[in-house]
Each structure stands twice: as structure tokens, then as C-alpha cells.
Image (cartoon, rainbow, N blue to C red; front, side):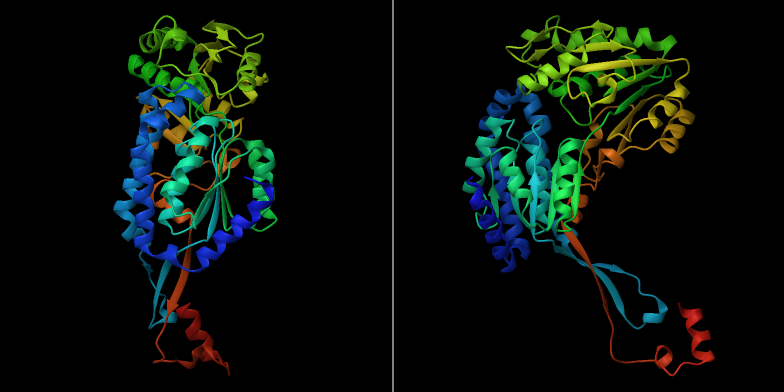
Length: 458
């Protein structure tokens, strides 16, 4: 889109929002149904674009993107009436007779900036919440996922109300111009460095932001676990999308005496998933572009690679790779990996993992594999993370009744299900009182009796 047209587009959306059409639940349902129809009508096109951009196989495309979005839409349609109703709260004695309630109202025009690793659902799942709450929106897909971006630029205007939604393609120049505009909410999914840029831009207009960032999500493995199932679930959650997942386990912590059995089990499951040569396996993805491929190769320099490490820059292939005990100050352990490399850190005692996790920035997710109830409680109460999943990986993302969001450096705000609806809503506080029983305790002239009564009521 031409830079000069961006401000005009945003102003047009604001004018349409002010007409009030988006507040009607019938309009919201229609737009959600249209988004669902778009997804179902073009499932093959979406899967093809995801394969072109990231080498995603059809099942991964369905599980983590297409089917995931449809589930989010269906959940919102089922609960829209309930979410949008006024929410009654109690009224204190001093304000009786009266009633109090929260009235959800749309914020206005939202900006949603998507990410390249799940370029379809990470752009449109927040849109589901924005639509359900009754907002207009500007969509900015990632320019790195060129095929998905181009496909959505074609489909969105054909299915959604063009007065309420606009998709803007482009790179840094377009994103910079979009961020100059005054929005009512900004929702960004991506990395920490760009997240800071987004937050600074939003601050110029005092715009609230939701930042879904990332970080180094730890995976603690206790020897009191089911080894085979643990290894299988780690491999599934780490190497889906070739490791390019914000909630993928970023590194494993295990006791020294249990490390070799775990490593052997992970290797066995990698072979079971992707064969002896994952380069020829259609279920294994590719790195998004040459720059990120080179970044990942750089992380491996000087490391103790105990499995994998093979790479092909022409096809952006990097094998599932295990690194044993990397330097904690190396780039591999300082930066979010966002690729198919799994460091394994060994400690004398698994209880020491809590201190190691707490020495680092708060992660988006934390994983713990154990049957030890005491260890589970210690990890839950002595660490901080956006989400915690015990004895599995990433599966918590399938529950729309759990909020998804970070804490500290891993982000702020949350969405999914009603949490997304509330993110894009203003819960307006309302109190209503009748004119009868207008007791004069609060009015001057004041005296000791009035003060003593008010002390008891307030």
C-alpha cells in the first residue's frame, strides 16, 4: 500500500466505527462467519502458502494454523452472547439502593501485527477477538512470509467488510507509517526488540498494547517421569515448524545421572518422527529465510553437537540438533533460538533447575516433566512464566479457557477465548441509582454523627 494512503485508511475505519454498526452482535457474527468461510473455502490455498513459506506439512498447517483458527472462531460464536452481556457486580451499602455492572464496549480501531512463524493464525486469531468485541482493525502480516501475506491481501477484502478491515502489506517503511497512526489498541506478536519499538510508538498516543513476545522457555525433566512419553512430547513440541514456535521448549534441564537416558530417548523419537534423514522427510519444515538460517548456523559454532547439525543453505534446511552443556553466556543461551536446536543442560540435582530458571528473564512458557508432586509445587510457586505445562508441551494452547500471554520480557496482556474478547473491549463501569432515599449523610453541613455512620458504612 502507498505510504500516503495509510493515514486515510485508518481515518476511514474510524469514521465507520463511529457510525456504530460494529456494535451490533449480528454484524459481529456475520464477520466471524465470513472469516470462517474464507478459511474453509481456501484451505488448500492456505496450506500451499504455508508450505511455500515454511515447508509446513499439511497436518501441521491444519493443526497449528487452519484448524486452530476455526476452533477459535467457533468458540467465539458459541459464547459471544454471554461475553457481550453486562456483568453485574455487587453494590456497597453506602450506595444502596442501586445496582452496578460492567458493560463491555469495543475499543474502536485496532492494529494487529502478525508474526512470520505462524503467519496465518497469529494474524487472524487476534482478529477473531477484535471482531467478537466489535472493533474495526488494520491487519499487518509479516513480510517475511511472503506467500501467506499475498494470499491474505487477496482474500480479506473479498470476505470481510471493507469498511471495517484493511490489510496492509509491506516491510519496515509501511510498518513504521502504520505505527504513527492513532489506534485504540495495538496487538503485536513477535520479538522483544521490535516489541519495544511498537510500545514506544503506541506511547505517543497513549494507546494500550498487547505484546506477545517470546523468550527462552525452559523444559525441566525429572528422572521420576515416563521417559518414552516425555521424550516423544519434547520432540513434538520442539521440532514442530522446525522449532520456529514462540512456546517451543528452548532448552532442557536434566540431572547428570539421567541425562544420557533422556538424550537416547530423544534421539530415538526423532528417528521415529522424521526418519534417519529428516532432509528427505515431508513432515519436517524449513527455516523461514536465509538470514535466519545463517543466524542458527552461527549459534552452533564451537558448540558440543551430540546429534544433528547438518545444514543446507540452498533449501534452508537445518537438521534436528542437540547441543550438550553450552556456555550459558553464548548466543545460543542468551538469545531465543527459534529454530531446531535444543540445548541440554545437566545439573547435579534437578532442584537446582529453579535457581537456573530464575537467573534468566521470565519465559513465555515453562515445561516440567515429573511425577513428583513436591517438585511440581516448588516449580509452580518459585518460578514465573506466562504459562506452565506439566508433563506435556504446548498442548495448553488448545484450551480457549486459559489465557495466553507473557510476563516480564516475554510480553504483556493476553488473549484466547474470553480473554481475547476482554483485551479488545473496554469494560465500562456503570452504577445506577434511583432518586428515592436520598439520605443526607454525605452532604454538608457535617457533624460527628454523620462521620460515625459513614465510617461504619464505607
